[in-house]
Length: 340
Image (cartoon, rainbow, N blue to C red; front, top):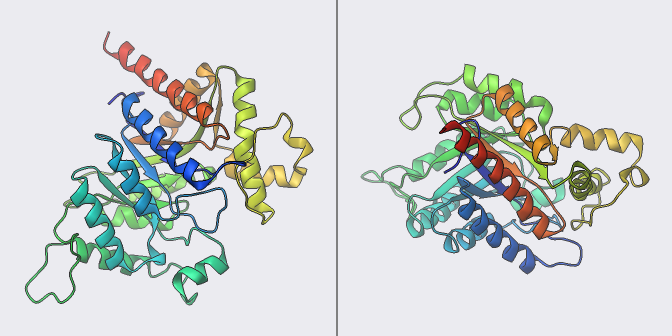
């Protein structure tokens, strides 16, 4: 495993469906990216639960994890994350117990408390909107119970699942899960790829509330961020416009497939819409090798992250592979320098 400034790098993938492409294409590209990430030395490969999104194919997250884990051999594979309020904890324990049994020592379970969808879809998933995620701690306790060693007289067990050691992460884009992860002594991953302004406050909240547990002696914080690397700054900026368009469509309430990059976003969005997209994606690192290296070193210094998870929604799969390859080159160069 290669590291930049001493920390592991990992991959977040949403199985993007591009304009003119299909979900089948997205799954093939996801597996190809995972195999590439494994070859390049990335630490883990996570996919995320989103629903009713024409441009995201990873809704059945556990199934996609099995697809990726079955097509790779070493890299850790997991959820970044499963939206626990959408599911009965027993079902998640069974699903991830099955994955851990099939791929022992390679499965991560990251948990979020948002629905990962709009209100109507959340209703379709949960059948009721009486709860807004405030019951997340109780759901987490129930999930951990099913992962524990079965006890005499336990009427309901997760089979497989009970007694398995599956790392559980809490994911967040604000302070709720940061504080809870600290109090429970769990690893925490912050979504700086769409909530950059809360990154430092959330990490401070996590670390200041941390209490050692049997799973974790000290805080372990991972930061997810968008990185678009290319041979020139201009090309990287152009490639990033596919993700800009994706967020713009969400703001407009018309989510769609991933669009080809454009030369001029100002011809597409209004100044108000640009400000709204920038608020979500303003923490992205976009540029050539030198620019990306400076950006990565800066975020590591600012956050003191224990690990970085790299996301990037590209229209062309080859451009996405090239971006992750450039990032890999940067930390391999750093590792080589540190050993001299």
